Length: 457
Image 1 (cartoon, rainbow, N blue to C red):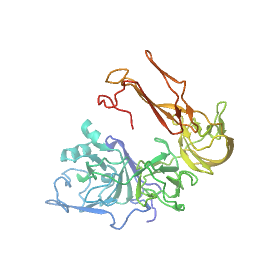
Image 2 (image 1 turned 180 degrees about the horizontal axis):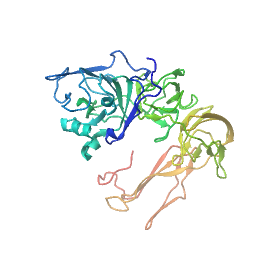
Image 3 (image 1 turned 60 degrees about the vertical axis):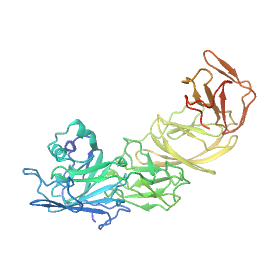
Image 4 (image 1 turned 90 degrees about the horizontal axis):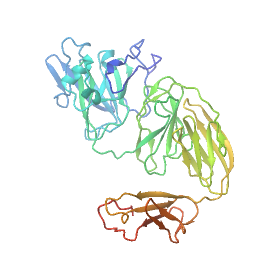
């Protein structure tokens, strides 16, 4: 479909009355829309509701699924309003991340005021939404969502977070008194790729999602053109940044200024599909500062600071950046910010490192820098992993401490001592090897006691 209006019409609902939003009225009744992998031509799940003069006729049983407009209500009653759901429900149950496509709405206002609410939308709820008389109880049920116009009378609606499993929701156009009740599936076996870039509440033209479940990574694919709703052109690619990050997928906008809504686009290495975090992204650009001010002992790499240690590096930044390292032994990528440093375990001690550092700003600008570093000699890294300091059972008998060797070399614990305000315990000769745990208990410790939580085996 050719684009007629230069900017899609978007209204955002943030848990309050949708009437608080006044999106720009389109100069024509149509805007362009194209969506990668988004079924058209009736491939979605279609429910049709016909509004008749004598009542409501609906294809799956009426109840409160459809409500005819009341006298005096703004907007003429449509002869037919239809709802498509993408992806198609399984056994009439929705996935937690879906796109609602509503067709046949009779007026602009009927679309822009659409909203998703949790639970069944009663006639009183619909009336309160239409009159903007929303109480606290109803306000809490409104799902933060994005709605946009695709062509005259046709609108799409998507929640900004996954819907809760096993719950009932209603899609409502209060202006014409229309609603549809739907239910989400009880269990979802499809994983979701979490969005790591851009940060929450930040705008940018580069987006990255990464696997948050155990996997060997995503299926590698070539970069390809792909639009995100509501028709913003861009390019999908493998990896979080510059092709690195085997468990990530990225999207680069060709132009900014609009809000994009992602869809399911990634395939995992085991052949299953993964959903993308549905939170929309504002593409408006921002200014960037590409020069960091680092402390002594830190390497300055453009806008980030890197403290190179033995088997790891600590990456920090004063602003939000997407950072990736390309090494001979693999690639690594994540978001770094003032409150989110990155401890990147990717080196071998006492070695020279040749690496490429990939950087992306919130605005979408990317740069690549070459670095050469020497890592330090192996460092002893024993950490306190867990402690039972105040047991419900008798003290100090049921107290215990677990240590973990987080380094690359074995550590002799002989001569170590545990102390608190009243007691102490010397550690006998124990060698803790890399990635090993050591549990220390008192002589009278009772492992069969069910009063306190036992240490993990």
